[in-house]
Image (tube, rainbow over all chains, first blue to last red; front, side, top):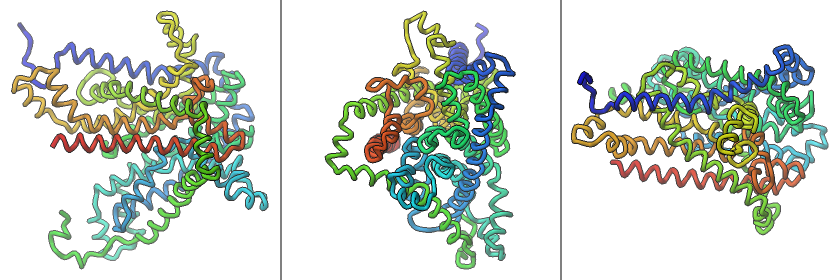
Length: 281
Length: 282
């Protein structure tokens, strides 16, 4: 009797409550519980044990290597991503669609296949294998291989977040600046960069998170040499397979924290950018 | 229309500089990291000859691994379609406490390293885990170390793709069409089934394609929970790793190439289907 007017497109209150409750349930079971399990397992034998596992010599070496790989990968893909976005969004040339497809390709290639392709080129029986061996240069089972494989899997992140935004903004401002005599670098740093800085930062964050957390591609090219070619995710696997669960989950918790910080920072960035650069990563 | 075009003085406007430099960097970057490595993958298997490649792929263990990878990816994507739609709907159309948190939690699989997801899901669904123990006690289901475990891991990695492709479309949809349908006497289920769902279908297909492509090649989150028993829970990427460890480069490349060709064929079919859906709507 006292039911208020409800617009025709709205569902009954009980239906809305049911939908909200099921959505929250799905998110808890599928997303929150796995994350909680990492931290619970890491702390099962107390915080000191967990910290001890992280401060272990091999763990520290893995952390250092992960930082080195990310420190090379992110700038390379940042430079490539910006160059590609500029060429595609601000200039005209034939074959643009093919280029964009190639840039996005690594997202639909299995990480293991990514690692495999570099083994086929640089491995002992690969195309350049004998040549490299003669000169005593090691790519596979060494840091260069890890870096190459990581660059491949994180290749599209920056380009994909910046390119659509630059295209949407058109090129009127850049053309005006060029007409007024600005150089290419001046146009980029004073006109284009301020317009895309949040999206750019968001792309860098995602690229970095994936670079530090990559497993499949680096697993193929690493050779799993402790203290030498083991990144953090690979170290998690080794500890886990040796039944050192406390250590494995402690290092995993550190990686999960990295993921959480990335997520929080990305949420804030999307907010700052007014949710313009949406879409799946 | 741009201001320059309106004024008709295109010739006075200087083109944006830097094409040579940026295109040069881009082509070097794409060529060295993407084109040459994938070309190596496309060429290497044929060292075995056509018959050799066919023989290498016809091994029962290879066929089984491909079936497990593609089958589990398909199953996970089918499960993720309704789940993703539900989550997108909750974010866009509902208002409840915790909606903003839900919105950011959905991206978790994007930012959580796959190896971490793998051991976390294994701990959760192991026979003594938080979810594994009750499932075992209540229904006698074992998830970890079975094909069901593989599907669970793939559901986890694929879920955000569907949510994030459906969400913007749902946001832009507006409610005019729904109101019109309701005014014309459609019941709510009719409106949802015949008006809303068809409008979301292309986005759902796009998201499904992304989730499927990711799931087929997924490695890190799967190998911990899968058990990796040959012919039962061995996925195709693991078989590539095993063949590489035996220095069978060409055989590993053959499996990789087969995976890529198969998944691109499936994505192409999805793309054509989507075009047909779009055209049908007009």
